[in-house]
Amino acid sequence: MSPQQLKSIGIFLGILVVILAVLHLVATIKAGDANWYFLVMVCGMLLLLYYTVFTGGRRRRR
Image 1 (cartoon, rainbow, N blue to C red):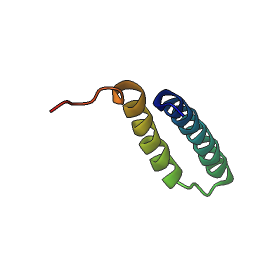
Image 2: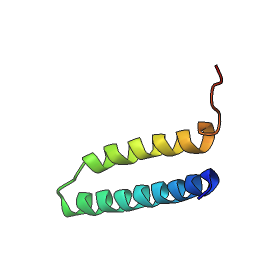
Image 3: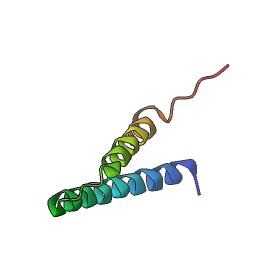
Image 4: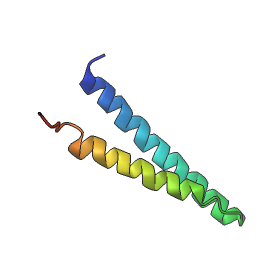
């Protein structure tokens, strides 16, 4: 697979993980037993997606 295809698959899976984690977080908050580590996971995943989408293509040359 080409690097562009791998990047696209990674972005898609990252967005899927964020959506599922947010849905699970909301469900646990409504049930009264919040799992806050899902919020931490969502924030970390969003940082990884931001880096991948906006700065992942720029590499430093020495």
